[in-house]
Image (cartoon, rainbow, N blue to C red; front, side, top):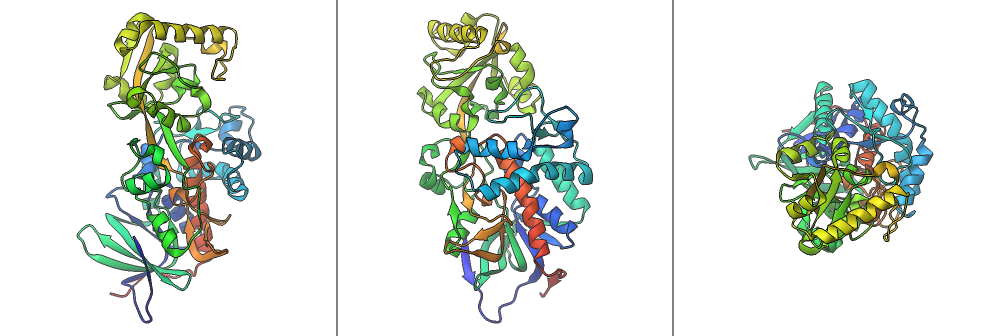
Length: 472
């Protein structure tokens, strides 16, 4: 990735009013918003079909105060969502960006539902850690693949130009303005596309081992469960441009990926009363804190793997997610009618597992708190048959990146903003503060979709409404 200053008289092959790098949730929301504002956007996408980190997620967007919540008598507000975000991030997130995302989430979900027909519904049979209300909005399959496919279909139906199979390699700048982008096609031919405005929506750096080792060394050897195209382009361009970068040590991990199958096991198995057991048959922390910070704790256990242990009731909740059903079909989930038999299948010491399990079940009966500070309630009591899944910790995506203002403009390191450069999604610093412990469930898609829509709208409103022009 490089930055080149434009020489006098240089021309581009094509000139467009708005160029977007990345056709994930952020980029496609930006393109749709720009189109509605009357500006044609061209989207550059490295994959043959848009996918990115969105496709690998559960596709759940936290939003507060939606009509979907009201239909289920769920009381919530943008202020409550903002407070939850900052509480989880220990107050480290930019208050202006938290307010923009919190207030924009409900309109975003209803915009996609009403204008583009997305059949959202609220996940209401369990709550995610850190959220004070049921506010996760998902599509019927509960997959990010359905979300990205619906976004792509909406973009295509509205004649958004997506140039797939192309990789942006170079930014051309003229003083502090972005003049265009150098793009390499799949056949190796280089194109130069000029633009009036540029939105970076090309995600984070999780797929770049060098940057991971530099910024989050504790995850350098972890399973990477994100998109391989997340190479840190925005971070590298930002450093070269003199952009302000924020919270580069923040990331979303996950402490429950079935191994060796590499299938995500929903955190509902923990939040509904399941526990994690290491190879010694012991629990090792408060599992309910959050799945992001749990990743590093899991990796520190013997062999870098542990077992999720739960029962049939919890399995029934988990089966609403396609990933869990896939894990069962793949043989990742073991089942036994007695705890002793489960311990043998897990190959952990029977006495240790027996002691941990019965201590937890006893705490559930009396609404007690364990030695790690985790609280249990009677509704979480488990019974036979029992289940276990061997899991490891994984890096999903990074949360640090380009610092932006409340209009999604990229900030300069020396103060002020770049006049025609915007960022959203993994390219921009999110709302999770400086560490994995600050990640509140859904923060990634929340920032991607809301800030993507905002970036598209703001870029369109502040750029000339010129047509796409081809020079050669």
